[in-house]
Image 1 (tube, rainbow, N blue to C red):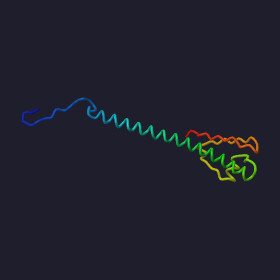
Image 2 (image 1 turned 180 degrees about the horizontal axis):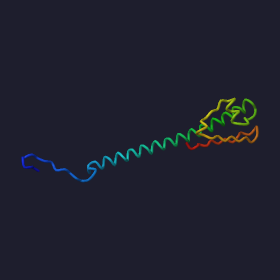
Image 3 (image 1 turned 30 degrees about the vertical axis):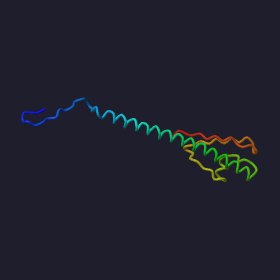
Image 4 (image 1 turned 90 degrees about the horizontal axis):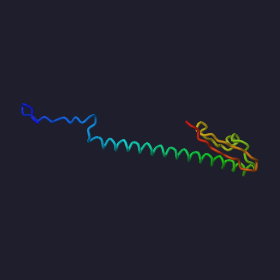
Length: 115
């Protein structure tokens, strides 16, 4: 389109707030961000579950080691901490250690606490 001076003036495309040619790339970008966040969340949950299982196995192995060395399972987690060096993040995990008898392996449960 020409104005009175002979210059070409481009017409503005007033299709709204977002131009139509930007909609698809924006949607793809949002989708990719969503997939990334979902993936990170999934990996975080899986890692926490593996940490929980690893801690449970470590407590059980320490108790079995104590049994093999001393002839009896430890009476408490405090004993395992003091004599066998077992440690964990007590703000993140709650460990339940229930002794049935000195010659029966204790029941060990690890619970992930809400942060």
